[in-house]
Image (tube, rainbow, N blue to C red):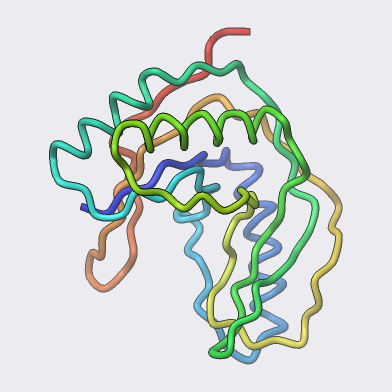
Length: 174
C-alpha cells in the first residue's frame, strides 16, 4: 500500500485552507484541486510498503516524542510546471516542526526507508496542474497546535484519491 506520514488539520485550519483553495479555483482556468478531507502536511513520503515495511514505519513513529507546538500558515505559492502549476499554502519557519520532521526522516532512513533528503519545505498542496492568473502572496496567517502525527494510507476508491489514517502518535503532555 502507498503510505506517508503527515499532520492532519483541525476543522478550523481546514476551513482556512479550503477558503484559499476555493479562491484559487475561482481565479483559475483549470486545475485538479485537493478534496477537503485530503488536506494535510506531509512529513515523510514512504511510497509503496508491504506489511513488514508498514510495521517498521509504525515502530519508528512509536519512538518519536514531541510536545505540542504551533504551526502557522502564512503564504500562498506555487511550483511552476509546464503542464500547470502546483499551488500550495506555505508555513512559517518552525524549529519544532523542522526538528520533528528531521528526527522522523533520520529514524526512517536508519530503518531502511529510502527518503528524499532535500531541504524540507513545509507546504499544504491546494491544487495540481493549475492554470491561473493568480500570483503568490502573503496571507493573513492562521495557526493550529500540532498534537499528533499520522501514518496515512493513500488509495483510489471509485476513482477518487482517499487518505486514511492507519496509525497515530500523539504529543507528550505539556
